[in-house]
Length: 226
Image (cartoon, rainbow, N blue to C red; front, side, top):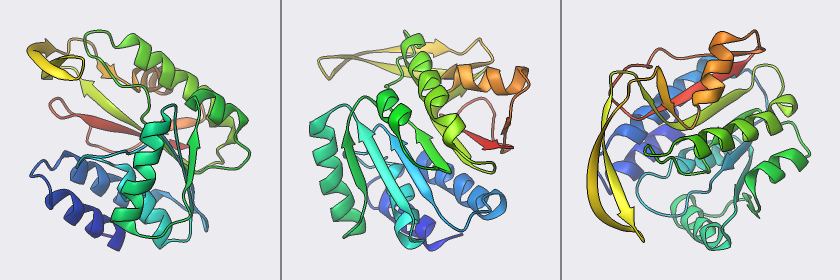
């Protein structure tokens, strides 16, 4: 495993025993070793990491820093972007990250570059009403996919496969007021649902990679451009 992964694992364990993000980073770290054949890294994160133990962007930003890559993070909230600047400085030190306040779809549409590592994680998933998040991430995918060269990796957070049950927190003005059990009866529900079905069921220049897609945990989807 890379030094970036070991750094991230220690960062997570210093604040929590929840190993979901560690497992996700371990999968990506292996894929970057086995599937990522570039001599440069140009990474985009939509939905910035702004605080809390589970900031997956810390792994991405550290990996980019360790490998002289470019890391850009975009969020519609200026407050979150400001918190993100503080977070990354405190955790990984001085960095050359690009911090952008913008609607993520508009940012990706106007992005001038050749990103080869993209993490879509902006519009929060609500399992009681998942369609807005699913659609938003589909539009992000449409906006950026043609700019990504062959061999690029795309990852999408917060997905649950058939057979999973989720104890879903119901919030009112940020306060936990109730918990509802949600059983996943469809093949997949999550931020990447539409992209998953597009790749699996249509002819495209993308393929799903990884063998971790099972019922139970909150999963990231990993795609590679052919």
